[in-house]
Image (cartoon, rainbow, N blue to C red; front, side, top):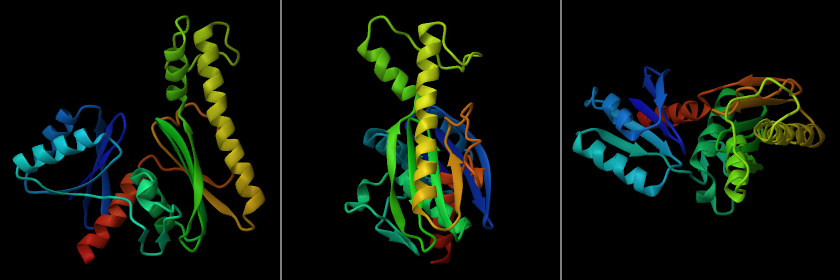
Length: 241
């Protein structure tokens, strides 16, 4: 079975066989993804998506045309012990939902998930599987894009400068937005320390982690494929059903 995570800006692909997850790669365009999938037309595809509905429909149509069996995973009210905290449970992003499932599956204590991408999100998961809620903020590049869009005199850079204090607008903008994301993480860490009596495992994921300072977060792991890990948990349940 092939697992596909379709994000806002890129896709990730993994193979799941004999309860083993193997990361295969990532890319930007749906054509590249379909070229890979069409090389194994007999396989099943399980995918999640936070992309536009138009892109989801295009993917499904082209998978059907290629004769590939597929299923899309959606956010549910619960999954085993994992319970969605949202009153309107469908509105919790499926990427966050799958990361929460993966966190609880791999760690039976309390866990916190930080996903850094187009948005930066924080989700807290009780050891009994209850999603306690979370925070959402713009990611580093999203913040830059928003300010550039509002100004005629500002441009952005998307690689990290070699200085700590910007001496040009582009460096200052990057460093300020980076500090905001790191502050989000620090505030989440402080909140958890004050509100949870027992230790919490921190799981970091997302394509925007590079260059961020998370040294102040104790008991932390970087899990770059956490959403795919959640898809693998769902795939296993489907295979065992």
